[in-house]
Image 1 (cartoon, rainbow, N blue to C red):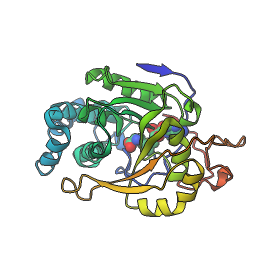
Image 2: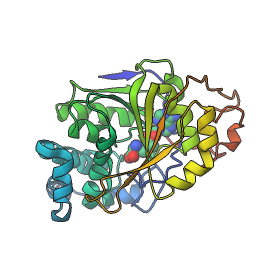
Image 3: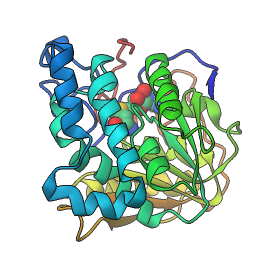
Length: 301
Ligand SMILES: C[S@@+](CC[C@H](N)C(=O)[O-])C[C@H]1O[C@@H](n2cnc3c(N)ncnc32)[C@H](O)[C@@H]1O
């Protein structure tokens, strides 16, 4: 199900985890056309697709632990990313050989800390990371993928149908700051990977969580620094003390770093009129920090 509600625009990532485009020449969320030329024939694409359906031998045990009997379904998603995802510019072609390690397993291990039967909103889902991966690994979850950009929501909707996930996954086109108050209904868990620095992310995600629910932000090695820098902003936004959790220890090296923030209080976030950025209350939008701070990219996907 796709709900077209809002005009799209790219709010930037400010992310410290490798996003889907990060291994290519460009580390921005816009894939370059030179990347797309890396795979330039249907035969090459087919070969790449066939190569990614099975996890590489060194990651097979981790993939089996994460996806269990749905491993083949995870392989179909890897294939979709390596083919349609690349052709449509949602993922860099050089990601294909490391889809399992950097994307499927990296995201899938988050399920270790998601309760059984939880409702999940995946904010800034992009090509379905981590949202579709979690839906594949955990059929008990009800997942809403939120993404502002039309090209990405089209891919998400098609992938959900192709993978037979329609019963548990919905796609909503929209920006976080326009969705607070619902729909979708407040979730038990809001996930985000490579979307924004922690303060901005908390401002976007905590209002989408039920009180007592939590934000799970998949971060990289800088998670501790981000927590130290933004813990006060998080508290002002109604979040509890951020806790850094390592997921997938013993399965992947390094494990995935997830910042967990419980929504303790209902706080009405201020929205500066001069900017769409949801900075922490009392701070100017220019203080929001993170990559691309003070700039607004106009390129749309
Ligand atoms: C770098 S991509 C990461 C995509 C995916 N989560 C991943 O890890 O591959 C950041 C995504 O966040 C989305 N985004 C940016 N600003 C947003 C906002 N205000 N609300 C919801 N999504 C947003 C972008 O459209 C983009 O798809």
